[in-house]
Length: 170
Image 1 (spheres, rainbow, N blue to C red):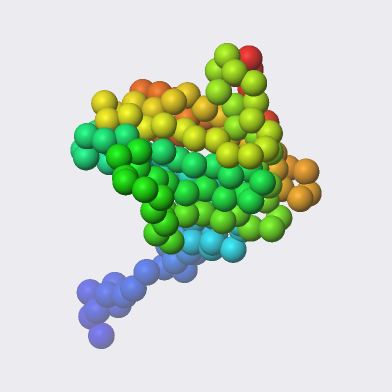
Image 2: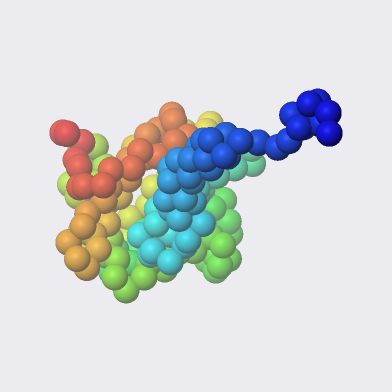
């Protein structure tokens, strides 16, 4: 056998260990994020995603269709639904435009600047055809006492999420 033939080979054991270690480190940081993204069993996460997504869509759709839309909130029934101010007569919203909160969640209040909190009944958050909305805070509480708030800003498409209850004074 020639000396050149002996030098042909694969990876050394140390190289394989280093590569496997790097893969393990990447998985260590990636797997928890995948769990938060792909598992939809938590009712609070589902409600949060629905509120954040619908507010963004409503601002866009109101400007595109050039007509106002309303995010209706029924605090007593723990329900959100979308309606159009231009619609004639009462219309039943589609399933995609309605969110019935899970039994472990409760809408505690809707808050508007310079107005009293709405603690029961129905509240309306308007989305105007110019692309802006009412400024509002939506407060939700879980059965275990955890609170969260969603701040809808008039001119921003993003909804600010807080993992505690906040007010306009905060």
